[in-house]
Structure formats: C-alpha cells, structure tokens
Length: 565
Image (cartoon, rainbow, N blue to C red):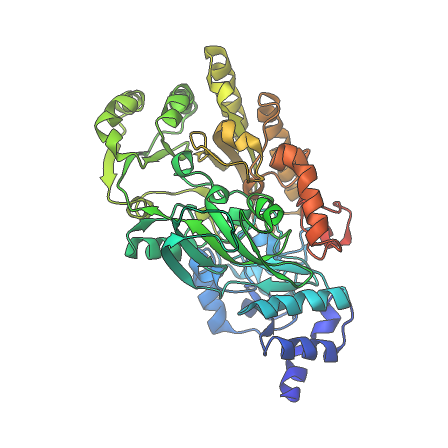
C-alpha cells in the first residue's frame, strides 16, 4: 500500500502552491479511504510534452477526447475537465493544455513544441462519498494551507471550481435521489404542512433528475443544460428555469440543505434550524458557505405544458430589429400570463405550465405570428404532456456550449423598462446596439416575475422585478493572444454598461455574469450583501472557502486569482 501511494503522489508537492510532505498526502489518502486522486487537464493524453501532476501521452485516449471535446456529457464526469476551456488554463500566464475547439483533431494545438501545463486544474481531488471525506479535506486545508475549491460537473463561468495548486472537493459521485409525497423539514417544533419533495445528492445532474421526476409522475423544474448539477452553484446562486415565472427560482424551491461547513460540522439548514445558513445557501452563491451534500427541493404534479416555438428567423439587421420589437412590446403581457423561455436572434422558445391557456395561445402570440407570416417563418404551437417532454425536444440555450473558452456579461432588465412606449423604444435601441458584434446573444425570460416568494432567499431583489435576463458573450480559442482575450473581456463590460445605464438599481445573475461585473456585491445580492458577509464570517471565519466575486471576496490581487485576466 505504501509503495502504491509513494508512486501515486511522489510528483505532487513540486507542482503544488505549497510544499507538502508525502507523509501528509498519504495521511489524507488514508483518511478518505484511498479516494485522494491527482488529475491532469482533460486533453493531457494528446500531448507528448507535459508539465502536469500526472498522466501520459496516449494516442487512443487522445482520440476519444478529440471526438468528444465539445461533448458536455463526456466532460461532466471527469474530475479534471471544465465546461469552459479557460478554467483548465492559467490565462494570465498562458499555461494551458487545450485543443483547438474549432477542430479538436488539429495537431497544431498539441504537437511539440506545445507543452501541456497544469493550468488552473487542481492538483488533487477528494472523490467525496460521505461527509467524513469533506471534513478531512477541510481539516487538511486548515493544517497545511493548501486552498480548497468545490467542484461537481465543472459548469462555472466565473472559474470558482478551479484554482492552481489547490485541493478540489469533488461531489459528482453523490447520486442518490429520493421522493417523498409528504415531506417535512427536519428539526421543526412548529406545525408544518407536509409537501411533496425530492432529496437530491450533490452529484445529480438535471437530466438524471428530470428522468427521475418523469418516472415518478412529478415535475421538478430546473435548468436547460442536461449536465448542470442540481444542488450546487445553480441553486445556491439562484437557479433560473424556463418555468421560473410560475414555479420560482431554484432557490425558492429549496426546502433544506445538508451541508459540511469549514469547521467540519455537518449541519442541516432549513426554515427551522440554522436559518441564517439556509438563507445564505438560497442565493448567496456556490463555493462560499460550505459543501452541500444533499438538497431537498419542492416537487410538483406532472402537468402538461404549452409551447410556442419559432426557428430559422433571418438575422439581417432590419429583420432582427422587427423581431426584437415584437419581443419588447409583448414581454410584459407574456410574463403576466406565465410564459417563460429562451430567445436568440434566430429562434424563439417559450413554454407555459398553465395548459388551460392553450386555447388562448393564438391570441397571446398573434404579434409573433404576424411577424412570422411576414418573413415566411413557421410558428409551432404545441402541447406537451410534461415539462420534461418539452425540455427533451426543444431548448437550445447557451449552456449547451461545452469545451469552448468563453465569457459572458448580463443584466436583469426590470419590468419598468417595458411600461411605456418611450422606455420600450430606448430598450429596443440599446438591445440592438449591445447585441451587435457578439457571437452569443440571448434573452432569457427566466425570471420569477409572477411568482410569490417568501422572504428567505438571498438573491438580488432585482430578479423578482425583472422580465429579462439579457446575455452577451465572446468566444476565443487555444491560440488567442492574451491581449485579445483582455480586449474581449473589456468589451463585454463596456457594452453591457449601456444596458446598465438604462436599468439603474437592477443587477445581474451571478452564475452567468460579467467576469468583471461592476459593484458585484450590489449587483448580485442588493440589500442582502452585508448580512451575507456576517453569515460568511460566522460559518467560515478563516475563509477556507474563497472564490472570485463571492461573498467575502478577498480581492483580485490575492494570489489565488493570479490566473484571472
């Protein structure tokens, strides 16, 4: 056993940010029952030259990776892989191990003299199977000073689950799902009305959860991307869905968390116990307050949904202006009727769980139909037996992009921007101006505008008064010069400033926002931020958990963020 560990970990300390003895790594590995792993970046087998913690050149494995480089399912279960390529790299130093995302078989990316570097991929991973594994990781970090990050599937536009020289707490193998028709929160002394709920392990991804819901004849609203984890940064950052307008955000539906906090305590947080932590985990951001091992979320009856879909829309400037005008002029009415969904320059995908509206859909969507007739585009109006049936057939949102290096900027656009002809015209002009010259442009109608929420969530209040989550983005490749990357990021901030100017007092969704979001504390949390800092200091006074633009952020100049640009 000792020889195995010596072989496995003999190269780790040299690539770590701290010089940790082999004996200490062996002790941690023993404590977690042999579940301490080291991992190199996703594309390591393609490189003959490498400076990574482990891995070898392997043409057969390389071929499999090349064939699946943009495959989110292939990536999500691999601990050293991230959905956005830049978080496998150290952008500031160009230490990277990336393939050509436009042509993964292109040898110019990986042939000598190209060297595969460890980048921002953590040197070590604890494959979590039980709470004690997380407790051991926190104890090790406190003792040695090795920073920890929390990683599940690697979906994170802010890079919060990767960091050079770190120890990752990897939760992707916690896959248990349970359904209870009459669930009550634990530890409540007051009378509680039971509700239907599903207990979800930290590693469960949305496709797995949706299939479970369908098999149990229930609806579990969630995100558009199949491989996003249902319990991690998604729900802890708020968590939007095409059904948010009726069923609320993921944070609204979160009934209970089982979480390991940095002190090593395993706590249950709900409306009756550890209520401050419950509040923080319902929107305060992932990777910040502890490692969530299980979420209990509301379940709803399996109900039909109605959908309106239009694709193949011409994207010339005049047609786009006309299309966006229809959207701007009708968004308020559609939100009031319970509609939600995804819009891009070339398509429109809306859904409504109020199936009783089916007979009225033609009236509600007549302006869209008029536009379609004028441009010879087909509008489909369909009824699906469930949300999952619609989800499996229709959405094409930004989250389906995998393996690219990309960054976003976004803004929550309040309902007041849609109330008058003057405000609508201004919004239309700014939307068109900001959208031009960006390969990623989305209008997500995924806000909880019509949902009556409790007061126990910490997302920005702007989420609840907005109709749009408006997104733009840039994409770059393995060989994009650092200066061009920096220009792209600056451009996103500058362009989104135009939308910020006409939406004063609003905010942004932390999980799909500008990497350099101005005044991020107010933008993400509004009036809740100071209270969240107090909760952060209570449960993590030593800041074992720290991440980019998270509650209690220590600043961009901190060494942990040396790879950010």
